[in-house]
Image (cartoon, rainbow, N blue to C red; front, side):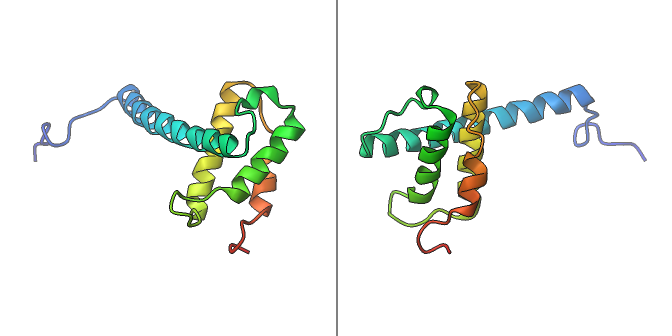
Length: 118
């Protein structure tokens, strides 16, 4: 039986890697932008400096922990746990990119539950 090359083309490992990286890069960039915008809005609402790079790790950990506990959707409802994990991963990526990792921010936020989530 002949293989239908139009429907099942042979794709090299390099092509697969490139396709996966391209797709992930677009989604990752979009998520990072979305959550960094949420951070900026939260900072502005609290009159806090938005620039994460200006904080020492301990101060940034404390601020991120507060942010993770306080953030809500625009309609005031809580985010689902999966959305919060995506948010934390996006902020972690941003900080790694900036070479400034908030050492305990993720671990602390996983133990802190927003009101109504305990």
